[in-house]
Amino acid sequence: MPQFTKVLKVSDLPSGSMKTVSAFGRPIALAHVDGQYFAVDDICTHQQCSLGGEGFLDSNVITCGCHGAQYDVTSGKVMALPAVENLASYQVKVEGNDILVGV
Image 1 (tube, rainbow, N blue to C red):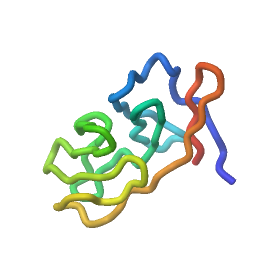
Image 2 (cartoon, one colour):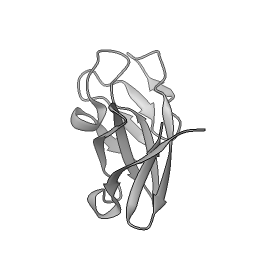
Image 3 (cartoon, rainbow, N blue to C red):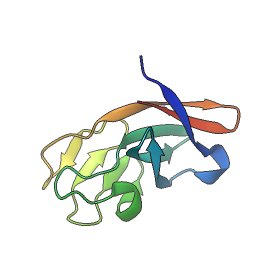
Image 4 (tube, helix red, strand yellow):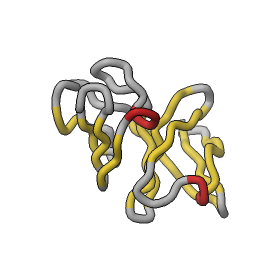
């Protein structure tokens, strides 16, 4: 059972955007896609670039800003090379105005 921690306010993450947050000391890329929130590891499995800081979100696809690897933000699965290893994904819930990530 994951432990949840508050990472952002709902108002801090508009639809179609993504940010790097910290959950229990772990960097997490948090994305808001069509009213739903998704969380995956922030670090690209290809070359250790920050996805939330240097990447781009288009619908449910994160593109790494360093070398163009792509991941599905809803599951962490690789969608395009050069990455070959999936990202870990985490549960997200909203309580009131707070976004919480479970690690």
